[in-house]
Image (cartoon, rainbow, N blue to C red; front, side):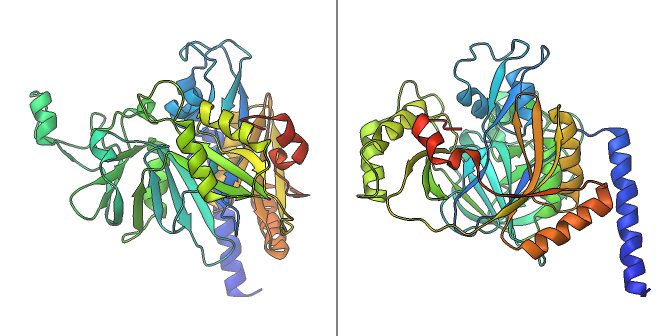
Length: 404
């Protein structure tokens, strides 16, 4: 047996013992979900459904499923009291997204949806995209454009802005690292004047327009991002309340209602925009779904139409790894696989959560990955054709906005 092979086995054995320790010690709320970056499509993820426990609130479920508070609230407009959920209540988890328009490289932050996308191109395997909910503030909302990561910091100090000290004179000039530091444990400093992407000591605030400036993430998400993003990684900050894209021949809309806006959106403007994007490509019946999606502005990527003509889609496959009755158990497995760089996601409906990897077009790579997962975690995966549930034409015909 070669030295190189022995060294690889020793490294994998160490990883296996480390993963066992993670499971024995329990896991904190896990970080972002990583998907295989589609070659031609624009939509990632699936809508999930949680069955609330008596102790749950929308805030606790938002953090558990790694979504922002405003986003889970918009997806569940019929929940009038987000602090008290009935046991067994069905809660929509908005985890299907249209990728932002433009170059798919580095980090892209969309202020309107309060979400960050990080594109990664590893030397082995498919390209990946990880996504994280964020919070922005009045100052952060004004920062748009192209930047790059200038510094990666651990335990940063907070230089309190003059405006913050004027509003609260009790604040010191500098807040040292620690529990009271609003920057949290890690920060990425962007070039051009101290604008940052950072953690927080107020995790409940993610998904709200409450940041003092800059962009904040859940602490567990920031711990992942700071180790994945390198110095000089490009960062693009946009503000797109309306996104559209395609998956398997379906047109998807994702519409976010601006903070503080009451009532419906300007549907005439929406119709004009759609007509300019896809002239003569929709059936007349599709406009009702488009109108309803615009009225809801639920912030979920929703299929609104099947495009005319034949759409050729490559065959893709995914690995079904395990099914759990509790999402917390599914997240523990996802945490293990995230540490190994596996593109993994979950699909939860009621009391069943499936953990899956993929989808993949390279079958040889997928089989090799399945063998590695089995060797390290002892889990034997099942290979299944990839077909998102909501992409079926009957489902599209029966739905208006959510279509899941």
